[in-house]
Amino acid sequence: MNLKRTLMLIFAAGVFSGANAQTDSSANQGKLVLTLDSAKVYAVQHSKTMRTADLNIQKAEWAKWQSISNMLLNIDGTLSYTSMLGYEMHMMGQTISMPPYGSLGVTASAAINGQLVVGVQLSKMAIEMQKLVQAGSENDVKAAATTSYLSVLIAQESKKTIEDSRKNLEKSYNNVVQLAKVGMAEQTDADQLKVQLMVLDNNLRAADRNIQLAKSALITALGAPPSSDVELTETLDYFFENEQVSEPSGSVESNTTMQQLDMNITLAEKQWTLSRWAYGPTLSAAYSYTGKTYFNKDAGFNMQPPHTLVLTLKVPIFSSGNRYAACKQKKIDIDIAQTQRDQTLEQLQVQEIQLKYNLSNAIETYNSSKESLELYQKIFKNSLQKFNVGTISSNDLITVNNNLLNAQGTYIQSLYSVMNAQTELLKLYNNL
Image (cartoon, rainbow, N blue to C red; front, side):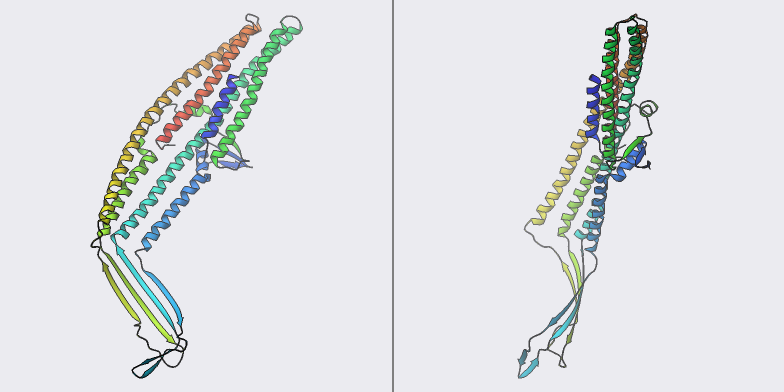
């Protein structure tokens, strides 16, 4: 029963840590056949989090073009009809008719100053910032896919260890049953072994449920349809034997949060430059054309010139300290961004130390629990042989079997601890 509780704890944790995966996978009749790498690829491609991040990048791209367009030529056209309703103007003894008329106007304008130029630079940096956010989301998605993928493998390994124990114990039970029928063994021994088999059967059913639970978490992490089925092509041995069960190398400087904070400092510096350009001049040009068409034979009184060109140079002179205060605020924002960066770096360095410590402990526990499991398996095998020849009692065999179950539970939990600690450290280094 301890093993059952351990498995439920492990794979409940797997569900909450789960979230997304990728493609190098093949789908056969609704089944996803996945390696760990292909699972991460599939998750990134199908994650709604990644879709949102991609849309934010597109939005930032259009914001950049909006900033550029503020410095480019703008042309507006107008078309109007005007009627004075029969009114005539009397001037110096003359009667001037005011006939209805239609007018066509075209206005072209453009303006440029330092703030507009810096604004374009800021919009380009906003795109880079969104790409960093996307990279951080991708790292989270891959971490969730990795945890979910390995949780399925651990669940399958747990079931396998229970099946092996049950198979060996069942042989002894069948032998005792036969011996009890001819009076060469106590029926109590057979009953005690049957109780142990029932316990193992319950653990097997729990293991099956945990496998399905872990697969559901993986499907959620992949962003695949809930009805999907998954087949994992890699085994735990690949990750815990052929691959490194060791501390990965990396630097917290590569963490996406650090990269975003570095970008925040640059953005704050650009914002400061933008505020200083409030002291700079603005050059603008505007051209307009206005044409009139009268709707009778007599032209009306028209003092509107058809062509107009206006050049303007606007120079800020005095703002009662408003611009100066704005510049000071932006300068302080640079210091705030730098302080936040330094504070976060210290926090991540402390986190790195803790994660390395957790991984080191997890690896040591894994190695010792693996060795203990192998020893208990040998002890159980030898005890079965002794029980079959009558040199130990059923109580002794049950004690050995319970010790084996506890060793299996500890081993399974150590697998999860190594997986979680290593994934968290890789996530910190942005190296998944």
